[in-house]
Amino acid sequence: MIHQLIFADAKPGMTVEEFQRYWVEVHAVRYASKIHQIKKYLIDTTVPFNDEIPLWNGVAEIWLENDEEQLASLQSEEFLQGARLDEPNWAAFWKTVVIDTDAHLVLEGPALSNNPTWIKLLILHKRKEGMHLDNFRKYFLNTHGLNVLKLPRLRRYMQCHTRDGYYTIGESRFDGASQLWFDDVQSLRNALNSPEYKNLVEPDMEQFLEMKYNFSLVVKEHWIIGPGKR
Image (cartoon, rainbow, N blue to C red):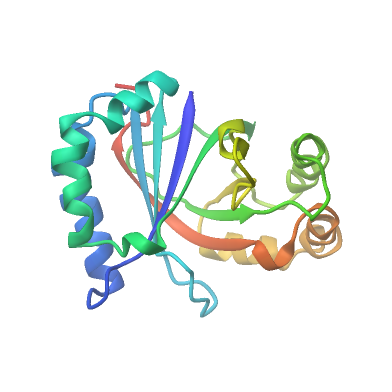
């Protein structure tokens, strides 16, 4: 199954709160959720964290069965005459970043809920220059992933690896993303200040990632379709 991540931000003149509210309550419900090929649909909206200013203030997560279903969704009337036409009403589309990924659930954790209370750290990654893509994926999953599992109070952990199609005619802007779930903002803050992060996870990231191209967001989840498939 394709796990698509869409990073978006507000159009000029719209506040973050207005942008997030429109995305969750209007665009998602009236337009995007009507695209029949979408099996699951989640919107992540940013929450304040350590005075950081994220590059984007929301992420859509979309699940589609396969490439054929994805193509059909992009050719559908619901997309072309609905969701696509609505995008300029709320999103700075020139800032949008989209990656299709293969998801690897490293730590399953508690059952997902359509009314989640936890928060999530979402990080975009670019591998070190000169590192082969296959080696990056193996290291990311089999070495770095095991280190991340040592973080205190980590509830759930997923890696999203950018799909091969993004490298057909060049380099993908990003090679993958990490998703780490915690009970609340303070639990996340404690984990990032822990010896496990400072002495193990952070130094390890520097071994295989271009840190200047690492971008993180702290978000809360809003299920539009899911967490089960429709």
